Amino acid sequence: KNRITFMSGRRDEIGGNPEFVYNLIKDRDDIDFKFLMFSDPAGHRKIKNIIKFLKLYATSKVVIVDDYFRLLNLVTKRDDIKLFQLWHACGAFKTFGFTRLGKKGGPKQTDPNHRMYDYAIVSSQEIAKHYAEGFGLSDENVVATGIPRTDIFMDKEYASKIRSSFYERYPQLKNKKIMLFAPTFRGNGQMSAFYPTLKKHTRAWAENMQYLLSFTRFARKDLKFRKNTAI
Image (cartoon, rainbow, N blue to C red; front, side, top):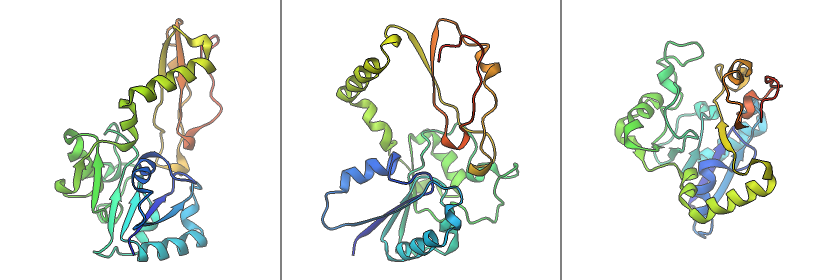
């Protein structure tokens, strides 16, 4: 049967790029959709997840992931299974995968991580070479399709709806200069993820700006700011 399985160690339910792909094909009667999702950083060690993974990986024609999914290293992928990496990031702003060779927390040249993908997608052809290096793939296996979860930004009706609902919730921000600060985490991965104190950043922030902060869930901590910072 045509089984497509979505797998993620980032979240407990489908989201991000996989969700947009799923929404496009979910009404097809000829596809059997399955899901293996967990957000627990130690979820790859749990027996129930391992058993479910082995069963789904052996019975799926297509498997879709959006991050490094450690359980993929347990077995050798069959040639008739197509594995797609819909990487969650939109660009190549930091090192990842095999671009971290020789760095603390980086992989070894002999590690199997990432190499089993059949295809990976990227936002543009200009950064395809960085993903090919990071995943240990040939250039032709990295396809510049654009990023599914950003397509909706081109929808003017959606943008207008979100803008209206935002100002309804935060009317005090109307006609204000707003800056979004959404940094990636520091550290070697989920288990050691952190973000440095924001005190030195906020010293340089303008008094007349309003700041929106969005941190990865791996690095959310008690954050301290300088007095009177508008956040």
